Image (cartoon, rainbow, N blue to C red; front, side):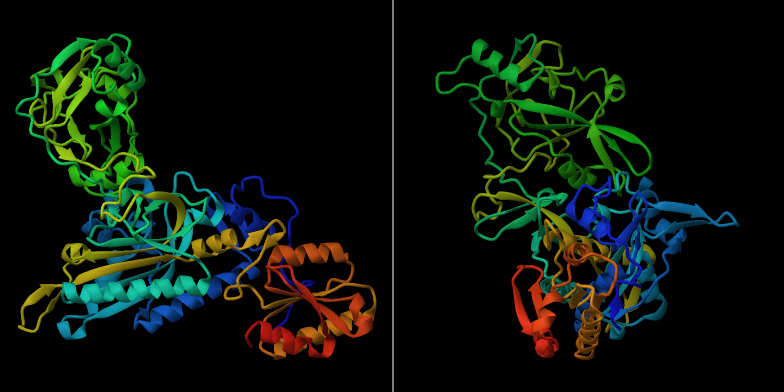
Length: 599
């Protein structure tokens, strides 16, 4: 049915919404696709639902093509399954919790691993039932502390999540490969360029993990890639570890007075004055910076951790969050920030500006033999035999020549520092370059984490119980709409790719004569009969300028203007993206536009 703007539930805006920071947020609101209901929560209007539905249709078609079957779970879920996997606690403040009138605990689902696992456990009991893959397109809820950028990071959003269930790891590998290929087809059909990158599993657990990132400057994720094809989220980049050094002949460490040197810059200046070297001057890379961080655990506890990194490197808190879980006593989502005054007061042994792994040459206060009880982690570049200038844990004093492995130890190694452009790729494929992107999809080899927690076992070919292995695969559906708006717009408005546009053609009647509106109405009906989706601007008392502005703002791929040319028997057919226009005979216009749309 032709959508007539005179009756369509739509109001376009000339000004950007005051809370909008990115183009997709501004344009989707201005063009009447969405409306803000609360921070991070949006209502979908008729045109927005049409785009959303087309994104969902493409996803469904590709999921069905690999044999996945669609189900639909409730968004309101009981506490018990999430307690069994410990995620009721692990999610911390990141989920919406509520109670019913009987005081029973529920949550608004942030994700549905538990429900999928329990459903398969309830219905399947034999290896003959496997493999099976189930998916849903469902609303999810996460209590984002700072919802921003419209649909790119909301508190309520729609995801496609699917789960594979296999009898063994070989089956999981096949399911993972099928999903990976399906995702590449989905994004190609949507018109979204993506880069598959190695990623960390985070709170999801499991082994292999990849993200599909859409490169854009407004993306919240930073990733790196090399000329040789390596690509990874910065959280997942592995440092090229230097070889250990034989420290047999290394001179003993020496404590030196270094007053007024609480920063790396002042320390390097003092080192070059106090202990100049003949071969080269001291640099920040020769210093060991001990960074004190506070970690908020899912249990509500706050733990202080010290991380040692070369002084020329900054700590990347996102990398810390992604990698510190392996060193903590509890699993789950955590928060990491620089330690504050109250944190430092609880540990008086840490002397700000002069923190180091030893209070003297041979008396460690951090690390495996530490007296502080603090977790002490080091950057992978801190290998046995490396020599450092670092704090002596005494105000105004540093240790020169403190040798790793000889003079101090550590509790673990962590990827925590910033990844720089020019750093070597871990696979030897060349120097890394950095870019930003929006995470459009994420796939995980979950393994048996959730199956073990919830008792999902089946009888194998020998009649013995075996735990099922699982994969998890997500696509951000509402986020895809935002990413498309980010990629397909210009200074005039949206310019949707045809695969997801709310209509194929936007007919504009401009002029005051009844014959113009009659011709435009007839053309709209002919276009609709040819299998096209049509928006018809039939508003009688709206100026041509406003109509043209609205057509460009709404972003339908083809605009047909019925106006002054009608006297010569022609209409103007304009490509929204390129701006190219041509006059086409009115009686041939329907067939011409249908051909443009591939009908």
